[in-house]
Image (cartoon, rainbow, N blue to C red; front, side, top):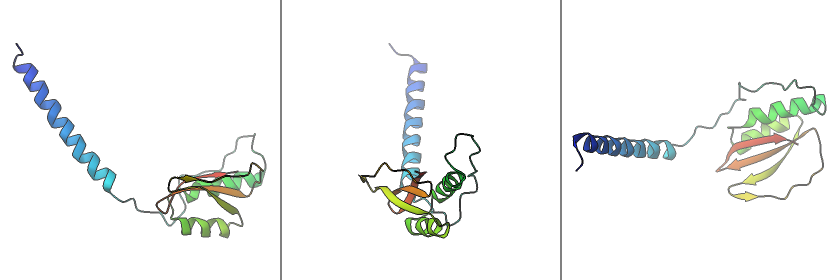
Length: 120
C-alpha cells in the first residue's frame, strides 16, 4: 500500500505539471516584439575560409536582420546594396537555384517576422 511520501510526490508532481502548462501557455501565446534595429550581437566572421570579403559583410547583414519584420529586413538589405530572396515563408519552402553570389541573403519568414537569414 502506498505511503504518505508517495502521495506527496504525486501531489508535487501534479502541481508542477499544471504550473508548467500554464506558464508554457502564456509564453507560447505572447507575441514577440519585432526589432527595428540591427541585432547588436552579430559579428564579422574572421575565419580564414570565407569566400570573399563581401561574403563576410553579407553574413553580418544576414545576422542583423533576424528578428525584424519582413519589410524592415528587405529595406535594411537593400540599403546595404545586397539582394535577397525568400527561401521559406509561413510553412512554404521555395525552390532556390544553387548558384553562388556573395551579395545575396536567403530569408526565412514566419508571420511577417524574419526568423532565419543566410548568406548564399
